[in-house]
Length: 135
Length: 135
DNA sequence: CTACTTGCAAACACTTTGCGACGTG
DNA sequence: CACGTCGCAAAGTGTTTGCAAGTAG
Image (cartoon, rainbow over all chains, first blue to last red):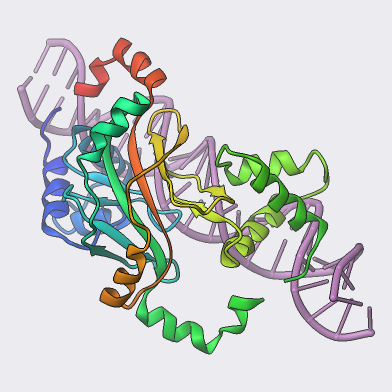
């Protein structure tokens, strides 16, 4: 894999942030130092970084993928209302990977524990319009 | 929630299948008994069923959401190459929800353990073009 | 030098939404 | 018979891709 300025900046940003950015957020952020970078380049490089294991793609909370350079064993709490993603420690043994590999033949690159729910702030908002939740 | 023919058929299909269908697959399938149903209706009803807890939306393997009427505690293995989703039993204690609720204030609707990897069939295919994986 | 990578713009794929008609409770 | 739901089509949103020009090794 060739080392370009674009790729460096993207990884640098991913490693520095804790917000589980979307591709769009990565694009906006990297653009401050590389104004002419394009979305295509961001998407292409994110994919390459994930294939190399330098980042992971999180499929949480719907349409948008999020990226994280910390591949350690923590779970993600996702608010289905505002899209907020918070980290949470979970008592999940990630060495369980090996057992899954033996049982299924899959090559396992990573695992993730995800909680879908509603964050405290959005719970308050929903109480005001709770009619919708029971319709 | 009003009970319409469309909604009934969608839930019926979800409960009968084990393939974690995408919205498109639900649409194609329900269309055999309700030929004039539209995608909009499928999407709207899937959302309502999820809000009522009669189905869950799985965010696995990328762009497309998948749906499952079995909300029990099992994990999902997803092939990043062909999109196959397989079930796998996991030693994850789902009563851990309560602890998360207390610690974070989130209202937790469900949790899921996901494994991202490559299925046996795609591993064979990739060996033939493995140059790409190391570029 | 050569082949991978970039920026751009157009194409794609999936999902959501506005509207008038329909049908359930 | 009122109001939620439907079918349709158009619009949105996020992502991928073809191409010519640029650049790392």
